[in-house]
Image (tube, rainbow, N blue to C red):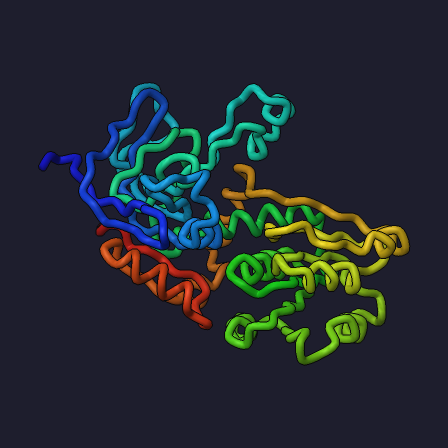
Length: 346
């Protein structure tokens, strides 16, 4: 055993993790090593657990990217962070040379490496990452709340790209973790938000967060939107359900010249009502991950209490129980955001 022997959780395929001792990698030039406090389980991590990404991640991968922690050590040339600072990782490592990077769109680099999928991730006590991916946190921000910054940054990116203006009518289709966060960020931007969701437990959480809600399997979503908007429709629609029903609804509820933001990743190509795009001059906006300014906005929102983190975080498990945590989340009808407590940090 050495002072850099750590505990890490490895995905081994077949819906299995093993928790093992390993050696932490020291930071090289331009890198920092982070002592991990918390790591959230996201939808992509669940896709890994289900075996849908085996060709990409393999069977010796430490996954996880929705994290918070403290800088433990830095490599040569690192001057943007200091040992002891609270940080989060924006888990995107771009090539710097592809057409997207040359145009300044580093977050959608043609050869993008997503940390925690294409490289080892945060489900380990010490994680070595490129220092350019780090964002420093306020000293008084709770580290469990900070583990929400990555998904909140997704929501900030979605809302920013939508061009949402104060007072506009918004429909969020899908009330899971990202959908609820999109709704919260849209409300903070001044939007009048309606959340459409079929799961009664998620509807209840959205209701506790103060949102108007509708279950489209029990009520007419289009009629509800028209009643709320004087038959105008929604100025901005976020499709976060990843379902064909959600895609059908996104064009049906949109106002003339409404903006539809495609947030969800669809497992197969959905059918889209292109006639509706023509008839109402709709705009479809693709939104993928985030940019640095979205992380800055997410940090500010959470630090100011603009995100109800205690309601969003529904359970916390130690790293030693990662297998049970994934199994429980997979079976739970009530969980919203599950965190893994990776290490003890004062």
